[in-house]
Length: 248
Image (tube, rainbow, N blue to C red):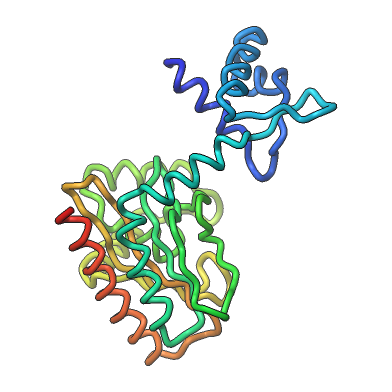
């Protein structure tokens, strides 16, 4: 493991569930010597990626994280090209909703941008920057359905290894993904958040190395006519974004 990987592993210790870490705790969690952990924490503090908590031996994520977050929101080509189209979709949608741009990150799905319908805000688990499971939710399933066979097999093997009760049926899941890929969209009902209908379409640009999906989290139990309209708007918006990404 190189130095960059070791520093990254330290940063990934800091979560919403445990935002404060001491050097000693990190040393145990990462199975490294205390002296090594001190050196690594020192490097991260000097770069602004970690910050010491005054009056404590603990550390939290530093202000450089906020700076990097702003930079990526202003410079990521996919976000830049998708933002106006997503804003249009949120405005045109016939239901209260949040529009979600999600992409594959490691072995999870991450929302990297979202737009909400003005004046109609609901809560959705697909928050920007939050890692989501692969097997639940329209945005995640739509991404999985686009993967080439070898990579999909690897992902499904990981899901089987992580599965708890009830048992994960890999063959049934494969059939579901094949149907999603064939129809070109995915609809889920309350899989991640109770009462929310998720609709997603593919947003993959192989030449740019992008495996993503565009989704709409619909609030308030929308009727079938509204969902058909959402799906049509979503498909048109996805095509607009894909064209922009492909030809840039």
